[in-house]
Image 1 (cartoon, rainbow, N blue to C red):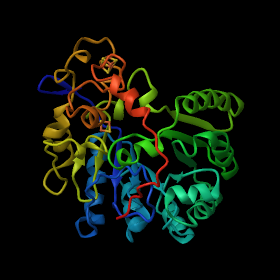
Image 2 (cartoon, rainbow, N blue to C red):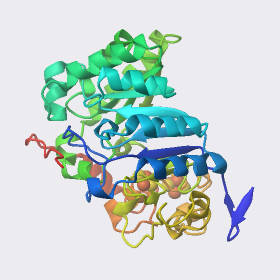
Image 3 (spheres, helix red, strand yellow):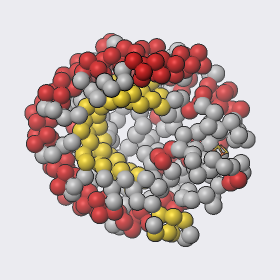
Image 4 (cartoon, rainbow, N blue to C red):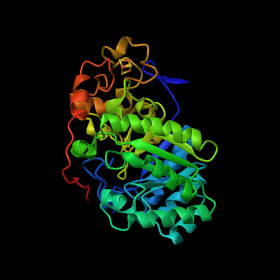
Length: 362
Ligand code: SF4
Ligand code: FES
């Protein structure tokens, strides 16, 4: 394994290609950055083609075509074909709004390997209310049926929060009925836009406890029929998640305008210098970009992480969350019960309001 400045340089396995920030939905937990890339700044298909070949040469196995809503790109089929031609396993992450059946047929013919459809709830009116878009739920059902008809593997992804956490059983039933082979139950991550709605989205401790027990029961009940992946809400965890598998270790994100980020929220950390695929090769960025090297290895860690036996397991948690909650991106993620700032996590989780959502609109 190569090393940079004495720190082991792993090979990236996955690339998130954020093709556009444009999106018809207005989800209150949107993970796009606060400052969105404009349409005229988006990379063209030829540049994506080069990026995918560079990614494959670097060791990347999977590309996730994402956004925003990738269906907003008129050249989506060309881009998917380029990913397939580069030898990458190609996954489309979509809200389903903006992908017609005709586009899906063309994507399948271009070599698309997998489709992931996000749903907001198992209840149609609640789902459309959370998405801020009438008719979104019906479109998701229709696209899921088309995906299965084409024989493509389907994953259903549901972001869970106070308004839908009581319907996890129904969400899994819906995923089964749609023909999905995997369902991801992922709790909202509170940075970026979701921070604005934290008090509206935060579940109660009792809801979280019931949900965790239900997920265990559902896994046992549906073993062999569907894989259930679950991400517990950070704020109620004892240890933090190993965010993105460790900073600069396993994955990279390319933004619509070509900046390469170690994680989708990295631009929320001020002072990091991101390099752009328009100016550098992906291999050069992976090895030498200041942003990627900022939190690689363990030398940057402060106590208690610096001497903690878990530091190579969770890498000190999430840098973006550490910054969002403490103002210091090198701090221990406060969701860790050993973190000096841990007490504020419980205080923040206890703040809940029922005001209307602040929708994300471009
Ligand atoms: Fe992880 Fe740091 Fe907490 Fe140890 S102190 S468990 S390394 S976040
Ligand atoms: Fe950026 Fe966790 S989202 S490190």
